[in-house]
Length: 302
Image (cartoon, rainbow, N blue to C red; front, side, top):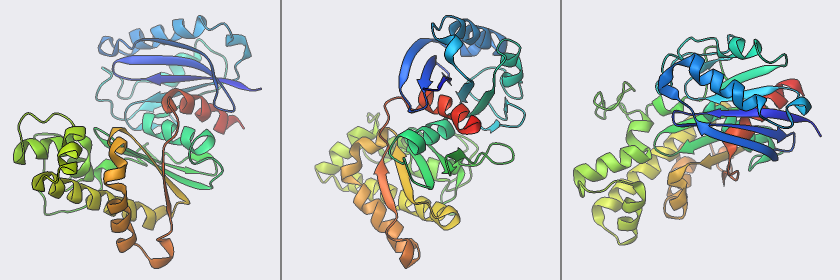
């Protein structure tokens, strides 16, 4: 059984795991990522974690999932927002000084999507589009078991797709386009809108869905608009890549029973008739980040 190391590096924690080609975690270590301390501190911490793995001698390569768009050819982050000093830093080259084995890196959403495509809900499908619907909105295109990252690592950065150019640009939130779907239909966008129209004390999308179940008219309007916006996003993606399946994960999907039918109805209304039977399935993996990082290496070395 082939084994690879997966590294899931986030702004708060870092996980290092040994993962089999079937996506099974056989060993795992978790520590604070020390994200504010700079690249060398963060990476030295990871190096130390890898050296403590009891099965290090059995692995064939290392894969890294990291926030932000990644230049996969240079092995560096194009734009880092929650890892201090990582923009442009040669992460892969740094680690290669310690480990004489193949090392690959990609965006955290991309590796999560790869995990779902290879060993999760999209297993066995030729073209898988993974969408994370959570605090933000991200995506990943996986074709024939490989992530499509693009020239500069921005493939799959669907949060900036415009679903209505006449909406207000949220310069107070980020620099995304006016009407960008992340600013209109993400979990954080729903909370912002609910605070503006329903109750300033609302802090989660879950609370909005509870009000929706009680037929609160403002909550119903908010959820209906979000459902249509997400459906439009999916239609936009589908007209470019025509996936065999959409795999959707993220915290907002915990309330999928209340909005997926509306989302799919919007999608079906906006695509060509022969595309209306596209499958929408729930992401299935508990730890797609660290599994997907290892799968990144597996997919390149297969």
